[in-house]
Image (cartoon, rainbow, N blue to C red; front, top):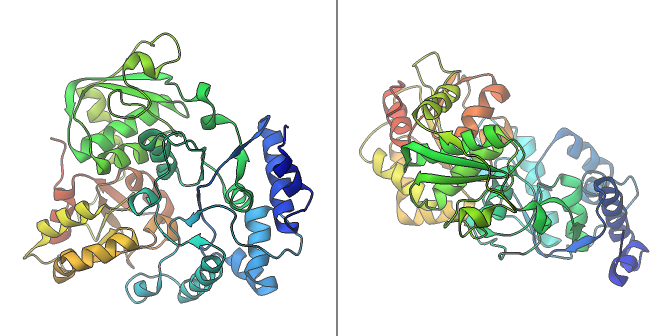
Length: 426
C-alpha cells in the first residue's frame, strides 16, 4: 500500500502509540480489502459511547482509554487516547437520563453512557446522538471522503449529499478518528458509484411518505448490495422521504448508494447514472407495491396495538409537527404508548415550538438519543406495535419478539388513540 510521508510518520509512532495502533489497524484493514492507498478524511460518524456489558468490564479494568483501545482500535495495548484528529461525532446510542422511569432501560447503562459522554466530549467527539447527523449540522460536502457508520446515515451521505463513505465498523471509525484516514476502496472510487439496476415505477404514483418507504424496500430487495437507479412516476421527494427511502433500501438489501436522476446530485439523467449501457428495467407497479406492503405486514395478526413508534430514522422537526397536529385535542387509548424518536437538538426545537407539549398532553412521548432497536427497549408488556418505518417493521419483531403493523403516520396515530389497527393499502 502506498503511504504518504505523514502516514508513515503516524505508522512509526511520531504521533504516539494510540495513533500508531490506529494506523496498524487501517493497514491491516486496507490489505484485506486490497486497497492500494488511504483516503484523507475529515468527517467521522460512529459509535463510541453506547453502553454494553463488554464496555462496562473494560472501563472497570482500565477506564475509557482501555475501552477505546480494545473496541475502537482492536488493540490490547495499554494506550492513552489523544484528542480526535478530525471532526468526529457520536451517532445514536442508549437512552439518556431523561428517559428514566419512561423507558425500561437499565439505569446502570444510563450512568455508564453519561460517563462516556464526558470522556469523549473532552476528546473532541461531538455527542450528536442521532442516526441522522445530517439533520443536526453534520453535512459533508459533495465528493468529500468520510468514515460513517449506520446504514441509513451512510446511504443518505452517499446518495443525497454526494459524499463518499462505505458502511464502516466500530474499529475502523476509531482508527479514522485518530488519523484522518480510511482505506480508499468501494464507494470512495468513481468506478464504484455508477448504477447497477434500473427500477422503473410504472402504473403507480410514488408521492407519499409511505410509498417512498415501500419503493425503497423494493429497491433493496432487487439490488442487494448494488446500486439502484429509480425512474418513472415519482414525485420530487423531500428530506424525510429520501431518508425513509434510503433506510428501507439499506434494510431489505445492503444498498449504500442509489440514484434518482434529476434529484440526487450524481445523476443528471438516467444515462449519466450508468457507466455504460442502461440495463433492462425492473418494473415496480401495482402488483409489486402490494407485495411489498404485504411483506411488511406479514407479522401482524392481532389488531390490538399497545405501542406506536414513529421516527426511524430519527424524525425531522416537521414530522414531529405533523404528529402533534394529528394528536391535538386527543388522548391515547388506555394501555397504548406512543414514542416519537428525534435528534436531541431537534427535540429542543420541538419543545420550544410547542409540539412536545401537545404530544405529551395526548399521552405520548418525544424521546431522543436512541430507539427501541438500538437499545432493545420497548414499553413493558408490548405484544403488538405499529410504525410508519419500513426499517423498524423489518427489524423490531425479530429483535424484541413482537408483532408489527406498517402504515401511514395518520394510521399510526389513529392506532395510538384507539388502541386498534385499522390500516390498509390505498
